[in-house]
Length: 309
Image (tube, rainbow, N blue to C red; front, side):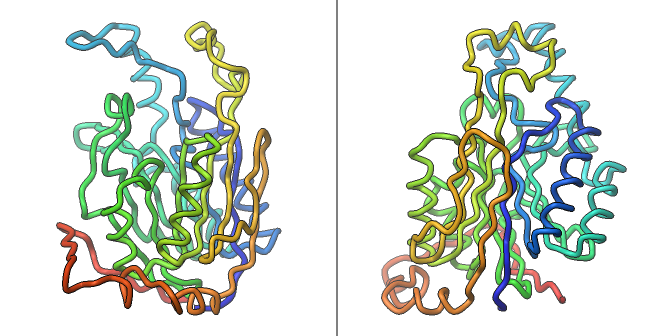
């Protein structure tokens, strides 16, 4: 592992417009490269958006035509992994020459189920792999399917071991431990949680896992939604998501952010030596683990994938 510079994007997608959102992603990749970043993290479901405030007219025991029309709109602007839109992003990543982790709503080509997915791209634009959210939260379960242990992925890169969880998966102690057991050093946490209390969770994970934590959220106003949804959002606040993106060290020190109420790029220098220093007094999967008492078995979790420079 080498010292490096990493970045977290807090931005507004073109909500319910996959093509324009791809343009926005490509522009931020360019900005990240210009800022000297070697790793760039985007928020949860940046394409086509996190549909905050919309109900899809979810009613127990009944569906409506309006709800299905909303779903169709969201579904049509979600992305298959093998798609021209993602090919454009891969080309931009290759030109920029940095690692990128991008949150999308992924469309399964067979059947059409949607998943909340974090895609990992290598510096050459290769899709290294993906993590699908294990358990969507609340009404998210109405629009996204569940994943399993096969997408609890980690990657051994020149920057360190990458891995991550999406939004409230980070409240799942065993899910976090499944990544700690793989030696995650750069812990990615794309989210839609803009509460002040989320900051404490991110700081706790950095201290618990003795890892760098990168958390990324969208900045979204009600006026950013298409006109066709303004009536559905009339009771929502003007700022729908304040952001709160942040970068935290393994010792719990806030290195950048939190960023509120605006778009922006947070950057921080990653000092590899801090990872080792932090393990002096605590290593949750090492000398502090008590493996004689506790054991965690994760079904279908893949081995850490080596990524050559």
